[in-house]
Amino acid sequence: MSAIVIVYHSGYGHTQKVAEAVAAGSGGRLLAIDAEGNLPDLDGKGGWEQLAAAKAIVFGSPTYMGSVSWQFKKFADASSKPWFSQQWKNKLAAGFTNSASMNGDKLSTLHYLFTLSQQHGMLWVGTGMMPSNRKASTRDDINYVASSSGLMTTTPSDAGADEMVAGDIATAKAFGQRVAEAVEMLRG
Image (tube, rainbow, N blue to C red; front, side, top):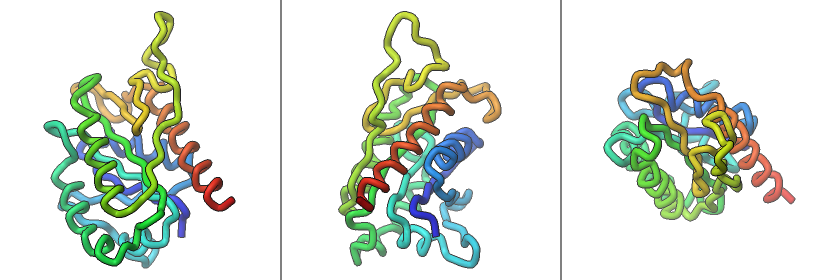
């Protein structure tokens, strides 16, 4: 079992690319919510078992209409079962989202993911990154989208998943490293 599980939904592949980068940075395991909002089995273990065994859960969803996708919401609603028994209490939590616009109300999605984590009694990990906000900054810089509370990435609506901004992918890897460092700090 991995110490870090990245549970996410991706409608068009962009959020999956971000999840893969977070996993590359954290050494975490991917757990994709399917098109019907269900968790798969991995290596003979149910998705819920993977989450129960994790030290950290990173939530990811595209931002659709100012919030998570319905598939992610179905997963979140189903998490009331582990909530009832406080299975995720004191685990680390973090979140990320992607949308087509630079803002795109992504903060609403991150707030949703944060609220979900707090309902479960989890400990939230932000990006810990300074924004790239100087005149010389470019889209390929780390944290150009300038989020502190969670990872935000932006992909134009007419761009394929293979056309994601290199700076956003690098930011996602750095965010994954931050989550891994937080897990190590808790292990102390």
